[in-house]
Amino acid sequence: MKAFSYWNFQLLGLVPVVLGAIHDLFVGNLFPPASIHALEFNDETNSFKLVHSYSVTSATSIKLTKSIAAAGVCSNTTSAFIGAMSSEPFYAFSASWPGPNSCGMSFSVDGNGSLVQVTDSWKYAETSGVHGLALNERDGRQLIYSADLSADLLWTHVVNKTSGKVKEVSRLAMRSSGMHPRHLAAHPNGKYLYVLMEKDNSLAQFELDPNTGAALRESIRLLLIPTDADTELYWSAEVMLSHSGRYLWATARAQRDKAITGYISVFLLGEDGQIIKRMFRIPTTTVGGWANAISPAFWSDEYAAMTDYPEGYVQMFKMEGRLETKDGVEYTTARPVARVNITDGGCCANVLWYS
Ligand SMILES: *[C@@H]1O[C@H](CO)[C@@H](O)[C@H](O)[C@H]1NC(C)=O
Ligand SMILES: *[C@@H]1O[C@H](CO)[C@@H](O)[C@H](O)[C@H]1NC(C)=O
Ligand SMILES: *[C@@H]1O[C@H](CO)[C@@H](O)[C@H](O)[C@H]1NC(C)=O
Ligand SMILES: *[C@@H]1O[C@H](CO)[C@@H](O)[C@H](O)[C@H]1NC(C)=O
Picture 1 (cartoon, rainbow, N blue to C red):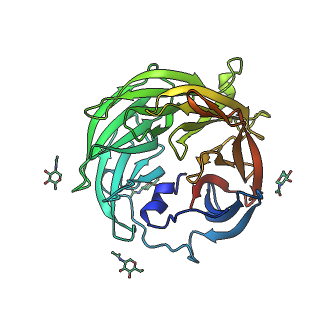
Picture 2: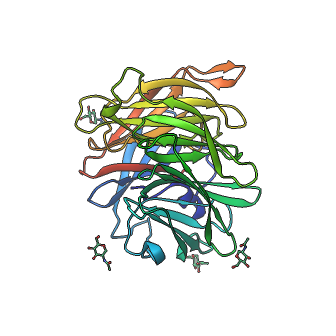
């Protein structure tokens, strides 16, 4: 469950300028008990620790300001993802999972970033199950990209920033069915969208229409597991951009019951967002079967936190082997530098960087 994203906290106006060596993170549980854990990472000593756990049903210094029931065509549905605009009016968006008949919702927020109401709801296709959303604003136009895992479609919607109403721009079929687009990331320059294919264990780059923002065509596809690996033993997980937009982190999970590990790949992007090359692919330390959700830090390009379920931990990776090249700064690998075990049986879903 993506109960939180970085943008949720950003819209709450809580993300401070980061100058110190101590960073705060939150990680939510994937399964009961419903908990949020607060972690603290020191980027000088690599000390990484659990500082507090919160039950979602009570409030300590995390305050539950509002909860809103799914409404409109989404009544009585559950969601796997929520994200919010990074500028005013800071609407939040969710999509229902697991489908079928997946739907989406937009939510307005108040001046503090607290949710106000459902401003619109929309349907995908009968066969749809949407697992991931990516948001991008380009030339004043707010776009939503939806990864429809079940129907093998990539959807583009546009948001009316006055009303919060959402309109379909296009739907694009994947090159072959059964690839299962799961999560995606949009480059801020609006030229490229990166889509992680869960079943195909690949990452695809799509070109975007310069006028409408619609996803047009796949231009690059790269495997997230070794070419000689059995693709049936993996299901790829997460793709996210680094802070500068020059690196793309993507992960593959090994299937839960297999005694093998997943993989982390990091790609170098050009200034326009074009994938230049894979810098490296490293195995994860455990199976990572239901998680391997990578979350790059927003205060540095070099760090990313990654979760594991069922073992229940958060691990910090740091890129190493910095090289200045004609294409920009490259790295030769990443290494796990710290780990926090959270063995309450439900941890860990997604990490949100707070500072
Ligand atoms: C909501 O969904 C649940 C699970 O599918 C179902 O048991 C319940 O009857 C539904 N409630 C309404 C009001 O549709
Ligand atoms: C924001 O939060 C403060 C403190 O809780 C409250 O006094 C204020 O009314 C809130 N403003 C809005 C627009 O909700
Ligand atoms: C956006 O919504 C506003 C308020 O409902 C409406 O006046 C306007 O025409 C809409 N814009 C577009 C492009 O549909
Ligand atoms: C976390 O758990 C693993 C596996 O049980 C153990 O090897 C490791 O020492 C633990 N790490 C910490 C920091 O407690």
